View 1 (spheres, rainbow, N blue to C red):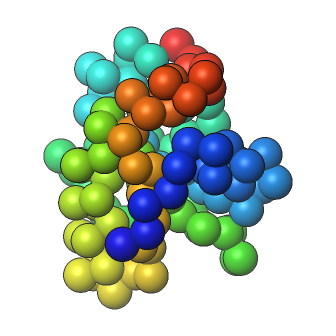
View 2 (cartoon, helix red, strand yellow; view 1 turned 90 degrees about the vertical axis):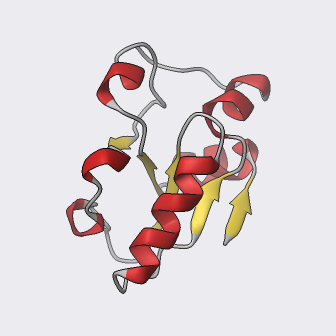
Length: 102
């Protein structure tokens, strides 16, 4: 499992090499979201639905980092090579000074 910092994720998004996948539930993402993230709630998680352009890195995110790690492990169990997550989730993202969308 690769623990990425908010800065690493932000840089990857800016450079277009990261697809950020938010695994929080709709009631959570309705309040605030990661800008540009793909929403794939853990309650109905299917890694096959994640858009993965060639050469991109899939990075999972949630509120604090626990569910995103679970999603990465679940994707790996299903044969996907997705092993990265945003350590600390949206809490770390905001603490690092990055904005959210509503």
